[in-house]
Length: 136
Image 1 (cartoon, rainbow, N blue to C red):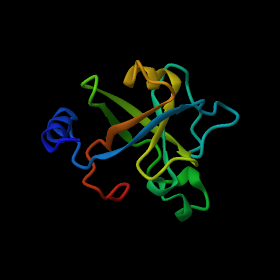
Image 2: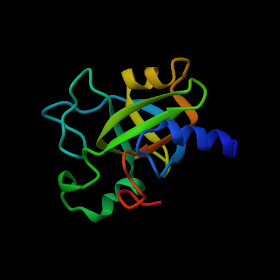
Image 3: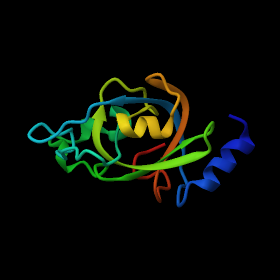
Image 4: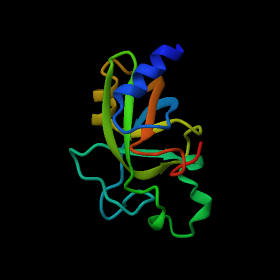
């Protein structure tokens, strides 16, 4: 990504100070009685995201339901469409690389209307984070 484009993307993501860039994929989030790793069941119609094990720091929590990364709000930016979308962290993506994110299918097609299941180069960040909430 061109540095000017990244600067523009950051300016358009309200309150975002730390940005990441990775692949966007979609999955079917768990609903009650089988919620995701945060213990939060998916409610259809809401936009949710699973972060990588690395970003969730999953190894630090014997009980993943108390992970402070759960319920964080993230902004997702698609440079191609020039649109951002907000989602809530409710799960861990076991197969994601460090900066990849996995979202519910409805959100995937909002972010990447022409996506084929995996879109590379999607920028995202935690709302209001200076890097301390999930690490750099």
